[in-house]
Image (cartoon, rainbow over all chains, first blue to last red; front, side, top):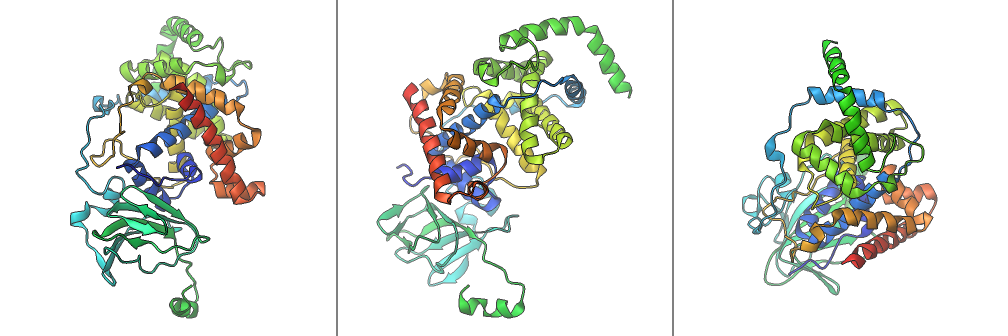
Length: 222
Length: 224
């Protein structure tokens, strides 16, 4: 069973270049753990970055002073630990449902999670990050039910961790990632038979400073 | 102060030997002089760069590291300057990067990637830290990692060759596609900011990125 819905090149490029903010990057990195195909694409992108680095033409400057500073640093630096050697890639049994780096953000695998009811049988967990531009949540949608509260503006990433959901003609199962923006009207619904657990990253809701606007914001659904 | 005098005299004692070793290493990686104006990065053999990096990792060989430093330091400094616009800050970030290369060299695995790509990722991470951003990263040793479906034995030998193919393929990309990649990697701009800066619709930038990587992927696939 391999992943069928991948990350777009432009989003993976932002991740490879290091310009994607923490919330989005968390979804990308977790998808990469489940998707060897996208890992190869990332390798190719980092390879391209390396090749571009090689091609930077530099002015002929004397680097001796820089090198002397570097030498002084080397003398002061500790010898690296021998265990930093690369580990051989063995067979990794998928013993954990939630891969890194998401597992560390949650503090546990699925069985240890503390879900909060969202109504109509759905649950969620807010995942705190240092990224004010995104809202990151883990959702658990009961089998056969639509994803609740599904209004958002801007980009949205949904990564399936267990179960599956259907959106129009497409089915998204473990490892699949859906990239949506506000042009796309969609109604993801959990497939029958099993609850769907997914990571959802959206643009953070606009925060208004005026308390009046804040009070009417839920009514206006803005 | 006493430290620098000590290093100075030590360098002096070993100077002749070091110069001889350095020269031979430079010849190995296609350099006659450091920073020679004629030196084009693209001429340097990726396999030699990987070999030097492995040597540093295995035996803490300072001469091998100096050869790497003379090749990469100006490029990493230029890379950092494109974001900071400040030469001194760029020098600091370059020193930070190269010192990290020295410390982490044993983690470089030539079966997994090429030297320049690996050094790019270190420079990128140093830059992310410098701007106090966070980038959750993949853990290749995680028990939940989905392994490659088939072991790709043929790939393992040829990471350095892959680097050459990528270089050649990059050179054949139309300039507007190359520009987008350079802005993304060097100027630290997400694709949406690139579109804004170039005054292009987002879709145009997306399609340039997709066309560029589809060509690079084709170049890598042809080899297999």
